[in-house]
Amino acid sequence: MASEADEWLQLLSQHPIFLEPPLLQPSTAKSENRASIRRERLVVQGTDLFVAIGNEVRRIDLKACKDAFAESEIRRLGAQNGASKQEAIRSVPWVRLGCEALTFDICKLIVSSNKKLLAAIGTHDVAVVVIPARSAVVGRDRRSGAFDSARFDSDSDENSNNDKNAVGFSTETKKGRWIDCRSMSVGDTSLTTGLRIVDAMWHAMSTTCSHLVVLHANGMLRMYDVSESVDEPEQTASVFGTGFSATRAVSLTMGSAIASGWTRVTAYIATSDGAIYALCPLIPRRCSIERSWLASLHETASLDVREWQAEEYETSEAIYSPPELVEARAATSWLSKVIAHIGDGGAERVFLTLPKELLRSPAAQGPFLMQPAPAPIKDADLDTESDDESGDECDDASAALRLETPGGLGFIVVAYSDAHLD
Image (cartoon, rainbow, N blue to C red; front, top):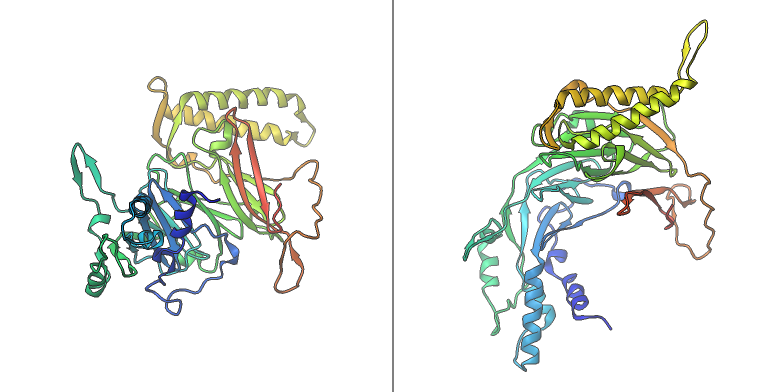
Protein backbone atom coordinates (compact mmCIF):
# COMPACT_ATOMS: atom_id res chain seq x y z
CA MET A 1 0.00 0.00 0.00
CA ALA A 2 1.32 3.42 -0.92
CA SER A 3 2.27 5.71 1.95
CA GLU A 4 0.66 9.11 2.42
CA ALA A 5 3.86 10.74 1.16
CA ASP A 6 3.62 8.70 -2.04
CA GLU A 7 -0.07 9.58 -2.34
CA TRP A 8 0.40 13.34 -2.21
CA LEU A 9 3.26 13.12 -4.67
CA GLN A 10 0.92 11.29 -7.04
CA LEU A 11 -1.68 14.01 -6.52
CA LEU A 12 0.99 16.61 -7.29
CA SER A 13 1.27 15.23 -10.83
CA GLN A 14 -2.30 16.44 -11.40
CA HIS A 15 -1.46 19.97 -10.25
CA PRO A 16 -2.13 22.80 -12.74
CA ILE A 17 1.62 23.53 -12.83
CA PHE A 18 1.92 20.40 -15.01
CA LEU A 19 -1.38 20.72 -16.88
CA GLU A 20 -1.87 24.38 -17.79
CA PRO A 21 -0.64 24.99 -21.38
CA PRO A 22 2.10 27.59 -21.89
CA LEU A 23 1.06 31.12 -22.76
CA LEU A 24 3.26 31.00 -25.87
CA GLN A 25 1.67 28.35 -28.06
CA PRO A 26 3.74 26.01 -30.28
CA SER A 27 2.63 27.96 -33.35
CA THR A 28 4.63 30.96 -32.16
CA ALA A 29 7.36 29.20 -30.24
CA LYS A 30 10.23 27.53 -32.08
CA SER A 31 9.37 24.00 -33.09
CA GLU A 32 12.05 21.60 -31.86
CA ASN A 33 12.89 17.97 -32.49
CA ARG A 34 13.54 16.70 -28.96
CA ALA A 35 14.93 13.36 -30.07
CA SER A 36 18.52 14.66 -30.00
CA ILE A 37 18.63 15.46 -26.28
CA ARG A 38 17.29 13.52 -23.34
CA ARG A 39 14.55 15.24 -21.42
CA GLU A 40 15.21 16.29 -17.83
CA ARG A 41 12.54 18.91 -17.29
CA LEU A 42 12.27 18.73 -13.50
CA VAL A 43 14.79 20.15 -11.05
CA VAL A 44 14.58 20.67 -7.26
CA GLN A 45 16.30 23.49 -5.40
CA GLY A 46 15.70 23.20 -1.67
CA THR A 47 11.92 23.03 -1.34
CA ASP A 48 11.35 24.66 -4.74
CA LEU A 49 10.35 22.48 -7.67
CA PHE A 50 11.04 23.93 -11.13
CA VAL A 51 9.39 22.31 -14.14
CA ALA A 52 9.65 23.08 -17.85
CA ILE A 53 6.36 23.08 -19.77
CA GLY A 54 6.94 23.86 -23.42
CA ASN A 55 8.89 27.12 -23.42
CA GLU A 56 7.94 28.07 -19.84
CA VAL A 57 9.66 27.50 -16.51
CA ARG A 58 7.33 27.20 -13.52
CA ARG A 59 7.93 27.00 -9.80
CA ILE A 60 6.01 25.55 -6.85
CA ASP A 61 6.89 25.20 -3.17
CA LEU A 62 6.93 21.51 -2.22
CA LYS A 63 6.69 22.34 1.49
CA ALA A 64 3.48 24.27 0.83
CA CYS A 65 2.12 21.22 -1.01
CA LYS A 66 3.01 18.97 1.91
CA ASP A 67 1.44 21.39 4.42
CA ALA A 68 -1.78 21.57 2.37
CA PHE A 69 -1.93 17.78 2.20
CA ALA A 70 -1.36 17.46 5.97
CA GLU A 71 -4.04 20.06 6.73
CA SER A 72 -6.62 18.26 4.60
CA GLU A 73 -5.80 15.00 6.40
CA ILE A 74 -6.18 16.65 9.82
CA ARG A 75 -9.59 17.97 8.84
CA ARG A 76 -10.61 14.55 7.55
CA LEU A 77 -9.60 12.84 10.79
CA GLY A 78 -11.42 15.54 12.73
CA ALA A 79 -14.60 14.76 10.77
CA GLN A 80 -14.75 18.32 9.47
CA ASN A 81 -16.09 19.12 6.06
CA GLY A 82 -13.24 20.17 3.85
CA ALA A 83 -11.46 19.83 0.57
CA SER A 84 -10.18 16.51 -0.66
CA LYS A 85 -6.46 15.81 -0.74
CA GLN A 86 -6.42 16.43 -4.46
CA GLU A 87 -8.19 19.78 -4.05
CA ALA A 88 -5.76 20.71 -1.28
CA ILE A 89 -2.73 20.01 -3.46
CA ARG A 90 -4.24 21.82 -6.46
CA SER A 91 -4.95 24.88 -4.32
CA VAL A 92 -1.24 25.55 -3.71
CA PRO A 93 -0.21 28.61 -5.77
CA TRP A 94 2.45 28.32 -8.45
CA VAL A 95 4.46 30.82 -10.43
CA ARG A 96 5.36 31.30 -14.08
CA LEU A 97 8.84 32.73 -14.62
CA GLY A 98 8.60 35.48 -17.23
CA CYS A 99 11.74 35.08 -19.33
CA GLU A 100 12.14 36.84 -22.67
CA ALA A 101 14.96 34.51 -23.75
CA LEU A 102 12.79 31.38 -23.50
CA THR A 103 11.36 31.19 -27.02
CA PHE A 104 12.04 27.47 -27.55
CA ASP A 105 10.82 24.13 -26.23
CA ILE A 106 12.87 23.29 -23.14
CA CYS A 107 14.30 19.78 -22.93
CA LYS A 108 16.54 20.08 -19.88
CA LEU A 109 16.91 22.25 -16.76
CA ILE A 110 20.08 22.46 -14.66
CA VAL A 111 20.72 24.63 -11.58
CA SER A 112 24.14 26.12 -10.81
CA SER A 113 25.93 25.07 -7.63
CA ASN A 114 25.15 28.37 -5.89
CA LYS A 115 21.43 27.91 -6.71
CA LYS A 116 21.23 31.32 -8.38
CA LEU A 117 21.25 30.43 -12.08
CA LEU A 118 19.01 28.08 -14.03
CA ALA A 119 20.12 26.88 -17.46
CA ALA A 120 17.37 25.93 -19.92
CA ILE A 121 18.52 23.71 -22.77
CA GLY A 122 16.74 23.15 -26.09
CA THR A 123 17.84 21.23 -29.17
CA HIS A 124 19.40 24.34 -30.74
CA ASP A 125 19.14 27.00 -28.01
CA VAL A 126 20.49 27.66 -24.54
CA ALA A 127 19.28 30.31 -22.09
CA VAL A 128 20.22 31.20 -18.53
CA VAL A 129 17.62 32.46 -16.05
CA VAL A 130 18.48 34.34 -12.86
CA ILE A 131 16.44 32.62 -10.14
CA PRO A 132 14.47 35.14 -8.03
CA ALA A 133 15.29 35.33 -4.34
CA ARG A 134 13.12 33.40 -1.90
CA SER A 135 11.60 34.92 1.20
CA ALA A 136 13.96 34.78 4.16
CA VAL A 137 13.52 34.57 7.92
CA VAL A 138 15.85 36.81 9.92
CA GLY A 139 15.34 36.44 13.65
CA ARG A 140 11.58 36.63 14.09
CA ASP A 141 11.01 38.73 10.99
CA ARG A 142 10.11 37.32 7.63
CA ARG A 143 11.58 39.23 4.70
CA SER A 144 9.50 39.08 1.58
CA GLY A 145 11.09 37.46 -1.46
CA ALA A 146 10.40 37.86 -5.14
CA PHE A 147 8.11 34.83 -5.31
CA ASP A 148 5.90 36.31 -2.58
CA SER A 149 5.27 39.42 -4.70
CA ALA A 150 4.48 37.55 -7.93
CA ARG A 151 1.46 38.99 -9.70
CA PHE A 152 -1.48 37.19 -11.25
CA ASP A 153 -1.71 36.88 -15.02
CA SER A 154 -4.84 39.05 -14.99
CA ASP A 155 -7.38 40.56 -12.63
CA SER A 156 -9.81 37.80 -13.51
CA ASP A 157 -7.31 35.20 -12.36
CA GLU A 158 -6.88 37.02 -9.06
CA ASN A 159 -10.62 37.22 -8.52
CA SER A 160 -11.07 33.53 -9.29
CA ASN A 161 -8.35 32.61 -6.82
CA ASN A 162 -10.01 34.65 -4.10
CA ASP A 163 -13.08 32.40 -4.36
CA LYS A 164 -12.34 29.93 -1.59
CA ASN A 165 -14.38 27.31 0.18
CA ALA A 166 -15.11 27.12 3.89
CA VAL A 167 -11.76 25.63 4.81
CA GLY A 168 -9.61 28.11 2.93
CA PHE A 169 -8.84 26.14 -0.22
CA SER A 170 -9.49 27.67 -3.61
CA THR A 171 -12.43 26.14 -5.46
CA GLU A 172 -11.03 27.22 -8.83
CA THR A 173 -8.02 25.85 -10.68
CA LYS A 174 -5.18 28.28 -10.23
CA LYS A 175 -3.71 29.58 -13.48
CA GLY A 176 -0.43 30.63 -11.94
CA ARG A 177 1.07 33.92 -10.94
CA TRP A 178 3.67 35.75 -12.99
CA ILE A 179 7.09 37.02 -12.03
CA ASP A 180 9.53 38.80 -14.34
CA CYS A 181 13.00 37.26 -14.37
CA ARG A 182 16.22 38.29 -15.99
CA SER A 183 17.16 35.84 -18.75
CA MET A 184 19.93 35.66 -21.35
CA SER A 185 20.35 33.70 -24.56
CA VAL A 186 23.72 31.92 -24.62
CA GLY A 187 25.85 31.56 -27.74
CA ASP A 188 26.43 33.60 -30.88
CA THR A 189 23.67 32.49 -33.25
CA SER A 190 25.88 33.23 -36.26
CA LEU A 191 28.24 30.48 -35.07
CA THR A 192 25.82 27.96 -33.57
CA THR A 193 22.85 28.11 -35.97
CA GLY A 194 21.95 24.59 -37.07
CA LEU A 195 24.22 22.90 -34.51
CA ARG A 196 22.24 20.44 -32.42
CA ILE A 197 22.84 20.57 -28.68
CA VAL A 198 23.03 17.22 -26.90
CA ASP A 199 24.07 18.10 -23.34
CA ALA A 200 25.21 20.83 -20.94
CA MET A 201 26.65 21.07 -17.42
CA TRP A 202 27.81 23.73 -14.95
CA HIS A 203 31.56 23.41 -14.26
CA ALA A 204 32.09 22.47 -10.62
CA MET A 205 35.39 24.40 -10.21
CA SER A 206 34.05 27.83 -11.18
CA THR A 207 34.47 30.33 -8.34
CA THR A 208 31.59 32.39 -9.75
CA CYS A 209 29.41 29.29 -10.36
CA SER A 210 28.75 30.74 -13.81
CA HIS A 211 30.72 28.53 -16.21
CA LEU A 212 28.35 26.59 -18.46
CA VAL A 213 29.73 23.80 -20.67
CA VAL A 214 27.66 23.08 -23.80
CA LEU A 215 28.18 20.00 -26.01
CA HIS A 216 27.01 19.81 -29.63
CA ALA A 217 26.30 16.66 -31.64
CA ASN A 218 29.28 17.33 -33.94
CA GLY A 219 31.62 17.03 -30.96
CA MET A 220 32.19 20.76 -30.49
CA LEU A 221 32.36 21.74 -26.83
CA ARG A 222 32.02 25.36 -25.69
CA MET A 223 32.42 26.73 -22.17
CA TYR A 224 30.83 30.11 -21.40
CA ASP A 225 31.35 32.30 -18.37
CA VAL A 226 27.86 33.78 -18.45
CA SER A 227 28.83 36.40 -15.87
CA GLU A 228 31.32 37.79 -18.40
CA SER A 229 29.83 37.10 -21.84
CA VAL A 230 26.92 35.05 -23.13
CA ASP A 231 28.02 35.46 -26.76
CA GLU A 232 31.70 34.51 -26.80
CA PRO A 233 32.81 31.20 -25.23
CA GLU A 234 35.73 31.37 -22.84
CA GLN A 235 37.09 28.10 -24.24
CA THR A 236 36.31 25.79 -27.15
CA ALA A 237 37.42 22.27 -27.95
CA SER A 238 36.51 19.57 -30.45
CA VAL A 239 36.17 15.87 -29.72
CA PHE A 240 36.61 14.76 -33.33
CA GLY A 241 39.10 17.40 -34.43
CA THR A 242 38.72 18.79 -37.93
CA GLY A 243 38.12 15.43 -39.60
CA PHE A 244 34.87 13.72 -40.49
CA SER A 245 33.29 11.37 -37.96
CA ALA A 246 30.62 8.80 -38.68
CA THR A 247 29.56 8.85 -35.04
CA ARG A 248 28.12 11.72 -33.01
CA ALA A 249 28.46 13.02 -29.47
CA VAL A 250 25.48 12.23 -27.25
CA SER A 251 26.37 13.05 -23.64
CA LEU A 252 28.75 14.88 -21.32
CA THR A 253 29.85 14.16 -17.78
CA MET A 254 32.55 15.62 -15.50
CA GLY A 255 34.04 15.01 -12.10
CA SER A 256 33.09 16.90 -8.97
CA ALA A 257 35.13 19.76 -7.49
CA ILE A 258 36.69 17.33 -4.98
CA ALA A 259 37.38 14.45 -7.37
CA SER A 260 40.87 13.00 -7.27
CA GLY A 261 43.57 13.41 -9.91
CA TRP A 262 42.80 15.02 -13.25
CA THR A 263 39.15 14.00 -13.08
CA ARG A 264 37.87 17.34 -11.80
CA VAL A 265 39.22 19.11 -14.90
CA THR A 266 38.27 16.39 -17.39
CA ALA A 267 35.20 16.37 -19.60
CA TYR A 268 34.14 12.84 -20.61
CA ILE A 269 32.11 12.69 -23.83
CA ALA A 270 30.13 9.62 -24.85
CA THR A 271 29.44 8.99 -28.53
CA SER A 272 26.55 7.18 -30.16
CA ASP A 273 28.60 4.00 -30.56
CA GLY A 274 29.41 3.88 -26.83
CA ALA A 275 33.01 5.12 -27.04
CA ILE A 276 34.35 7.58 -24.46
CA TYR A 277 36.58 10.57 -25.23
CA ALA A 278 38.29 12.82 -22.70
CA LEU A 279 39.13 16.53 -22.89
CA CYS A 280 41.70 17.65 -20.31
CA PRO A 281 42.46 20.07 -18.78
CA LEU A 282 39.12 21.86 -19.08
CA ILE A 283 39.32 24.43 -16.30
CA PRO A 284 37.50 27.75 -15.83
CA ARG A 285 39.58 30.91 -16.05
CA ARG A 286 38.27 31.94 -12.64
CA CYS A 287 38.60 28.83 -10.52
CA SER A 288 39.23 27.49 -7.03
CA ILE A 289 41.94 24.88 -6.44
CA GLU A 290 44.01 23.42 -3.59
CA ARG A 291 47.79 23.67 -3.51
CA SER A 292 48.05 20.03 -2.41
CA TRP A 293 46.03 18.91 -5.46
CA LEU A 294 48.42 20.73 -7.82
CA ALA A 295 51.48 19.38 -5.98
CA SER A 296 50.16 15.81 -6.19
CA LEU A 297 49.51 16.09 -9.91
CA HIS A 298 52.94 17.61 -10.53
CA GLU A 299 54.67 14.85 -8.58
CA THR A 300 52.80 12.15 -10.51
CA ALA A 301 53.53 13.77 -13.88
CA SER A 302 57.23 14.13 -13.01
CA LEU A 303 57.44 10.44 -12.08
CA ASP A 304 55.81 9.56 -15.41
CA VAL A 305 58.43 11.62 -17.25
CA ARG A 306 61.29 9.79 -15.53
CA GLU A 307 59.65 6.42 -16.19
CA TRP A 308 58.98 6.94 -19.88
CA GLN A 309 62.33 8.61 -20.67
CA ALA A 310 63.84 5.14 -20.82
CA GLU A 311 61.66 4.44 -23.88
CA GLU A 312 62.92 7.49 -25.75
CA TYR A 313 65.58 6.94 -28.40
CA GLU A 314 67.33 8.91 -31.15
CA THR A 315 67.83 7.93 -34.77
CA SER A 316 69.84 9.64 -37.49
CA GLU A 317 66.73 11.48 -38.57
CA ALA A 318 64.78 12.28 -35.41
CA ILE A 319 64.18 11.61 -31.74
CA TYR A 320 61.35 9.17 -31.03
CA SER A 321 59.37 9.91 -27.87
CA PRO A 322 56.53 7.59 -26.82
CA PRO A 323 53.09 9.30 -26.61
CA GLU A 324 53.00 8.74 -22.85
CA LEU A 325 56.23 10.71 -22.45
CA VAL A 326 54.95 13.57 -24.61
CA GLU A 327 51.77 13.74 -22.55
CA ALA A 328 53.64 13.61 -19.22
CA ARG A 329 55.99 16.42 -20.30
CA ALA A 330 53.07 18.57 -21.41
CA ALA A 331 51.31 18.00 -18.07
CA THR A 332 54.47 18.82 -16.10
CA SER A 333 55.00 22.03 -18.07
CA TRP A 334 51.39 23.19 -17.61
CA LEU A 335 51.34 22.40 -13.89
CA SER A 336 54.67 24.18 -13.34
CA LYS A 337 53.28 27.34 -14.92
CA VAL A 338 50.10 27.22 -12.81
CA ILE A 339 52.11 26.70 -9.61
CA ALA A 340 54.44 29.58 -10.53
CA HIS A 341 51.40 31.79 -11.21
CA ILE A 342 50.02 31.05 -7.73
CA GLY A 343 53.30 31.61 -5.93
CA ASP A 344 54.55 30.14 -2.67
CA GLY A 345 52.87 30.40 0.72
CA GLY A 346 49.35 31.40 1.53
CA ALA A 347 46.18 29.43 2.15
CA GLU A 348 45.67 25.86 1.02
CA ARG A 349 42.69 26.79 -1.19
CA VAL A 350 43.47 29.41 -3.79
CA PHE A 351 41.00 31.51 -5.76
CA LEU A 352 42.70 32.64 -8.93
CA THR A 353 42.23 33.99 -12.41
CA LEU A 354 44.33 32.09 -14.92
CA PRO A 355 46.07 33.98 -17.75
CA LYS A 356 44.88 33.17 -21.25
CA GLU A 357 48.09 31.35 -22.15
CA LEU A 358 47.18 28.68 -19.57
CA LEU A 359 43.73 28.19 -21.08
CA ARG A 360 44.82 26.24 -24.12
CA SER A 361 42.17 24.23 -25.94
CA PRO A 362 42.46 20.68 -24.60
CA ALA A 363 43.15 17.98 -27.18
CA ALA A 364 40.79 15.02 -27.24
CA GLN A 365 42.07 11.68 -25.97
CA GLY A 366 40.44 8.43 -26.96
CA PRO A 367 38.31 6.73 -27.91
CA PHE A 368 38.49 4.62 -24.78
CA LEU A 369 36.78 1.25 -25.16
CA MET A 370 35.84 -1.34 -22.59
CA GLN A 371 38.27 -4.24 -22.38
CA PRO A 372 37.04 -6.90 -22.51
CA ALA A 373 33.97 -5.71 -24.38
CA PRO A 374 30.70 -6.32 -22.50
CA ALA A 375 28.75 -9.36 -23.62
CA PRO A 376 25.85 -8.41 -25.90
CA ILE A 377 22.40 -8.51 -24.38
CA LYS A 378 19.92 -10.64 -26.29
CA ASP A 379 16.47 -10.62 -24.80
CA ALA A 380 13.33 -11.02 -26.86
CA ASP A 381 11.38 -9.11 -24.24
CA LEU A 382 13.75 -6.14 -24.22
CA ASP A 383 12.01 -3.03 -25.49
CA THR A 384 13.91 -1.20 -28.19
CA GLU A 385 13.30 1.87 -30.24
CA SER A 386 13.20 1.77 -34.01
CA ASP A 387 14.96 4.07 -36.40
CA ASP A 388 12.20 5.87 -38.26
CA GLU A 389 14.06 5.78 -41.56
CA SER A 390 15.46 2.25 -41.67
CA GLY A 391 13.18 0.43 -39.25
CA ASP A 392 16.24 -1.08 -37.55
CA GLU A 393 16.42 -1.36 -33.80
CA CYS A 394 18.21 1.56 -32.19
CA ASP A 395 20.90 0.52 -29.71
CA ASP A 396 22.88 3.76 -29.70
CA ALA A 397 24.35 5.14 -26.50
CA SER A 398 22.22 7.95 -25.12
CA ALA A 399 23.72 9.16 -21.82
CA ALA A 400 26.85 9.02 -19.67
CA LEU A 401 27.27 9.56 -15.94
CA ARG A 402 30.36 9.61 -13.73
CA LEU A 403 30.05 8.14 -10.23
CA GLU A 404 32.60 8.00 -7.44
CA THR A 405 32.84 5.81 -4.35
CA PRO A 406 33.70 7.31 -0.93
CA GLY A 407 37.17 5.82 -1.40
CA GLY A 408 37.73 7.79 -4.60
CA LEU A 409 37.21 5.02 -7.16
CA GLY A 410 35.53 6.45 -10.25
CA PHE A 411 33.05 4.82 -12.61
CA ILE A 412 31.64 5.97 -15.93
CA VAL A 413 28.23 4.50 -16.73
CA VAL A 414 26.91 4.59 -20.30
CA ALA A 415 23.19 4.12 -20.94
CA TYR A 416 21.86 2.83 -24.24
CA SER A 417 18.56 3.33 -26.04
CA ASP A 418 17.76 -0.38 -25.74
CA ALA A 419 17.70 0.01 -21.92
CA HIS A 420 21.02 -1.56 -20.95
CA LEU A 421 23.98 -0.05 -19.09
CA ASP A 422 27.72 -0.48 -19.51
